[in-house]
Amino acid sequence: MNPTLDLLLRRNSPRPAQLADPAPNADELALILRAATRVSDHGNLTPWRLDVFKKPAQEALYQTLLGIWQWKYPDADEGLTAKKTGFVRAAPLLIMVSSRLNTISTVPRYEQILSGGAVCQNLIIAASALGYGTCWLTPWAASDADVKAHLNVKAEDDILGFISLGTPTLTPPERFRPPLEDVVVWHE
Image (tube, rainbow, N blue to C red; front, side, top):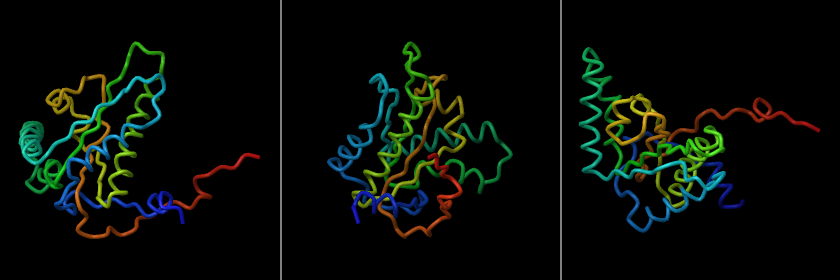
């Protein structure tokens, strides 16, 4: 089988806590980021941004999210708090992809958002091609105004995902994939 198709057909997402060192090295990460940014981009607007968080920055981000979460949800139990904030420091590397919309352009907002989604998917595929595991999450923090402000994401922009990267510690079980007849409509 074609190696690209084989990768696409077998790719799966371990949870962030199932990703361990090593993370991609500097050369691998540069390759992953170059591949991530080779996406369809109507108008060549580059309507997205990638923020790479290495371990010290992940810990600082965790402390920020923890503070925001505890301020907004003071009655949340420890388990829920850990689940809602711990994802940012669970894996060896974290990349946040956010939109950076061009509001002057005639290119519709949704096309710019879709281009950012393609950045996320290319990042995942490139990392997977190098043997790394990834997990793309859009938790509460992705839409929280205070988190966005802390991360210098404009109010009108979106955090499209937090992508954890590392070496998988296990092979995730295969999840349900819809039969093609349930999602494909043929027109002749």
